[in-house]
Length: 199
Image (cartoon, rainbow, N blue to C red; front, side):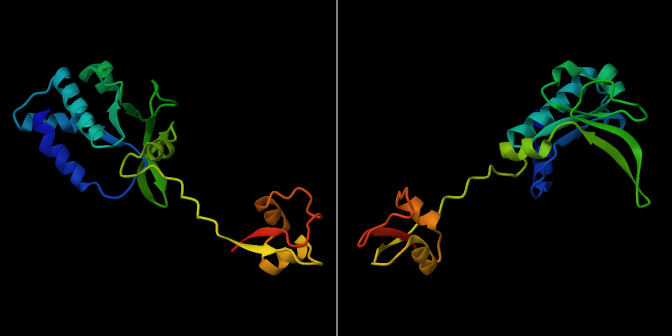
């Protein structure tokens, strides 16, 4: 875990802005090839430990993480039962459906959009709602705006006044005046009655 610290720190410093999908820890064949070129042959236990350590570090820093794995790695190259606390982003191309439950499914590498080819991914969770609701990935829980203080002026009813005329004079509504002054019968007001009118 300690040897991963500078790499996770560097990774975190490169992430900018708010985003509403998980960070995927992508461990696959290229990862093992790179490791072997450095003179290290990974085992199921070491691969699992690397993935878990990376994801733990990112979770501690306030990110929503997932593990990006294919069926071969899940079945043969890691101890997947030790990683089930993280969402699975399953890479399984050319199938009618994913072979196991997952948060996201990469079902193809041949999605064509206007001549450009992309990987095709399907999300089974509303990650935007989950992540923003928890304030993860540089997002913050939205605090409800504090209600603006209401200011009032006092108007004293004159002979011949109606609430309709008073409301028109002050640019408000009969319903608003009635609500602010606990008036049940809008047709019943009296001379010199004080009315609170919103400024």
